[in-house]
Length: 176
Image 1 (spheres, helix red, strand yellow):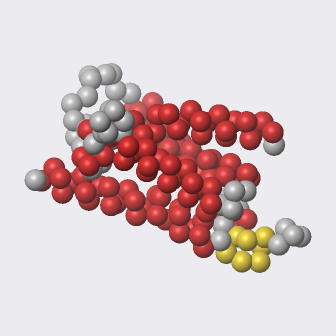
Image 2 (tube, rainbow, N blue to C red):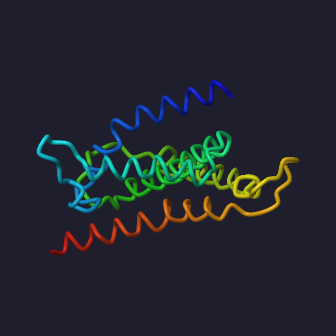
């Protein structure tokens, strides 16, 4: 448990330095609203800083500052990456990139078969996962007695609503 705590603390400290700048870079590339590119007179990305702070506070609150829940949330985010990256590899193989990409040798095994196998394994692991324990409220005996609606709402907001809002704002700005 101590190792997990130290690991999560280190990850949070490290990401707190680059998260605002990553958000700003995404805004500069048109992936997020251009409003996030604004800086203070001291050249600090204040808007993206406050977004990072808000997420750093709200996400742990949603999981009641429970270390096990936060570790599980971290794993779930990794699972999302393990699905998105193979899909991107397949899209590059098919030549569906929206921007220019470097030429590279294509291989059906490494560019299609392995990514599909990866997605199948991740989906299997997600199906076998104990979702009730993660999004339930347990009593002192460890029995699930309710639903943590706040955690569910934060997951829906973070994985669905916020990306849709940011994509809509970005698309609207590109049209103007």
